[in-house]
Length: 275
Ligand SMILES: [Zn+2]
Image 1 (cartoon, helix red, strand yellow):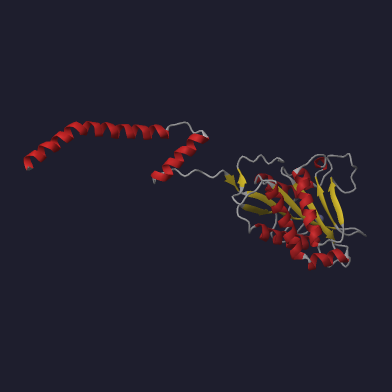
Image 2 (image 1 turned 30 degrees about the vertical axis):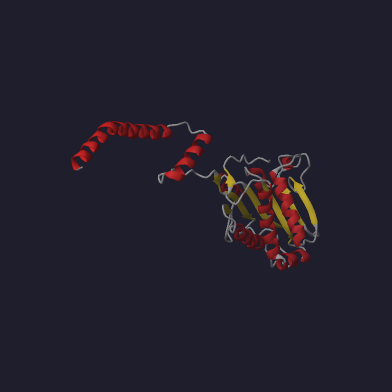
């Protein structure tokens, strides 16, 4: 019995050994060929699906998303007080910064939203520097927060670039969302979405608020009521959290509605143009 069994194993090895070797060689060759195959999406997907199920050495595929980058700009600061109230005890620069920080806090609660502030303290920042910060970061949006001044007048107005009113544009859309949310929060007056620069001639397309003209991304300048209006100052204080919620909420709703942003971030193939 023992002798017969030994002879049988020798035969088995003799016959099947070369076949086994051939199979191993073929497997190695096939695997190598897969790695060199063209990287069209279908091929990559099927390869990954197969490997993720069977092979612990599967190569992770980089998610085609990036962070949404928004600049929040608190107007004025430092030596530049901005507008003042009638008793000159309240400065626009302080209200702007307070609101900007509150909006930042709210936007930071959303995954894959990156907020860049042009200032976080009471410091003077040149207008061009504010634009540079946004342009160098290749930001997606720029929201500038200000408060207004006049001998009489009350309410909120939002300024966008002069050449943005003709068609559906991102900055106009952004301004409309913010105004709608602020109206719901409660403002003394909706003064509308305006193009260009206050007191400029309508046809002067070169006349714009500096940040609307020199930033490369959709931008708007929100005038959060008048420093010279008691009702606007009262609203700013009593509805402060509602206003911060409204600006952050309007922004998130707009970028979500337009498919610019998902919970995974911004699809990498997004062109930054209106859908
Ligand atoms: Zn201002």
